[in-house]
Figure 1: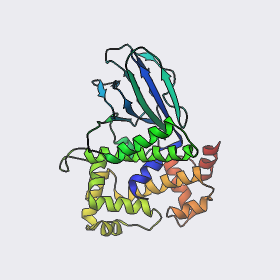
Figure 2: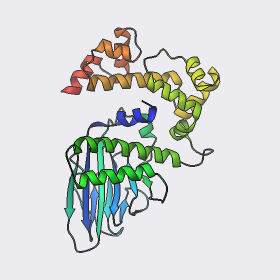
Figure 3: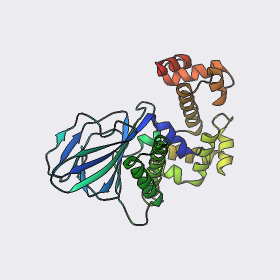
Figure 4: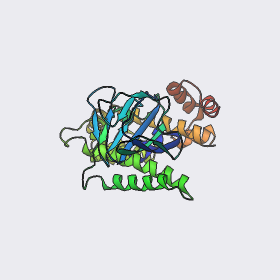
Length: 306
């Protein structure tokens, strides 16, 4: 897997959810913050306003996509001045569902999707994102994102055999396309910084993909630099400046994060997990894992499945 694919798989826990919601004016709803969750919303019909906890209201038109990566509270309304009724539940609670809220006015249809995240162990790329990402529908831009939205809306609006698998896959695709679109549009090459710049940088991008494709390989700063096509010193400086961690610090973090995911989701023994992420000694792996997660690997696994 390449790095961005890995990040999408890593940032989610449990089953994704999605809902096709029809609102008819007048309407306005406030959704409370939900730490440890992320959601994205797409306008399928009509228009509405998204009201963030800070900043100006955001006008949403047909085809617009909004991503809230940190579970912040927000409001939705047909008019930015509309009083908001507090909602005690999230828009999305099932893999796919539909809901309607009747009124006498114009209709707005939203596709609302979400998933749980690991707030204390999320990939740093998630932490680098702003509280709100708005991707306006612009003719000719992000065609893959638009195609995924249309397919997902069709599956949710008319579920057929195999819909569970199709919807889960499309939600992953949609998340990936949102991140691609955001990083592709995050300023000009000379002004972007952080993870957007790291992903756009060919040399650092090669090194990151190498780490993610082969976390168990005995990488050194020199071998990663050679893979990136840079000198050892130049690579170390550039990687640290863009990623925010030294190359081997990021490698260790990713190895242990990958190990934690394997312990949660697979039946591999602790020794097998240790070997897969590059530790020749189960003892050394156990010590490193405990330093990062505060508990031994076996205890971590038991707590994850409890």
